[in-house]
Image 1 (cartoon, rainbow, N blue to C red):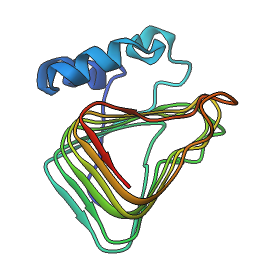
Image 2 (image 1 turned 90 degrees about the vertical axis):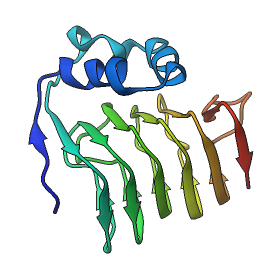
Image 3 (image 1 turned 135 degrees about the vertical axis):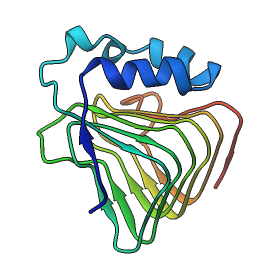
Length: 159
């Protein structure tokens, strides 16, 4: 597994402010998780630079920050082993075969998200915000009037 280093709870929030696009900063500020004082669990890890993996990727901490593009052959799974919650942020593009959210997980991609097979984010209290384009063959995200689990997409979606 690639090198991830522990960081303070304030570090992901600071990275979003310092390195994120204006759109990411605005979207992130909409959520309670933007205030690390509200985090019950402060476990957070960061990876600096682009990340290319050939056998899938599973989030390494409750709060995971990747400062660079994420290219994965296989699945990106944001379930870090906790029951629910947390933050998954990529300041860069994500390319994979499958992209899977998790219960209560706030996911932010400051760039494009391309999953050749499926994006699955139909989990209670979860969020998916993509500042670039989302492209996938299939999207599982709930129904807007029943449980409101839809991605927040700003430029364009191609399904």
